[in-house]
Length: 73
Figure (cartoon, rainbow, N blue to C red):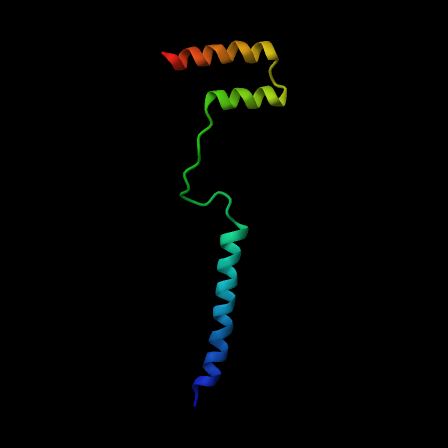
């Protein structure tokens, strides 16, 4: 007899909770706490700096050779 009124209020609360959960899952997947991020390797940093124009082609080639030489050892 009294349950009809209580279910109506609880029904809206569940819809709001589901909506918040769906938005959190799909709209905010960036930088989740505790998520392991891939670290940038020195070669990746070098490529990014070359692409941004911070270093010249000669500097890029020279540093790349040094990094690859160190990697082989």
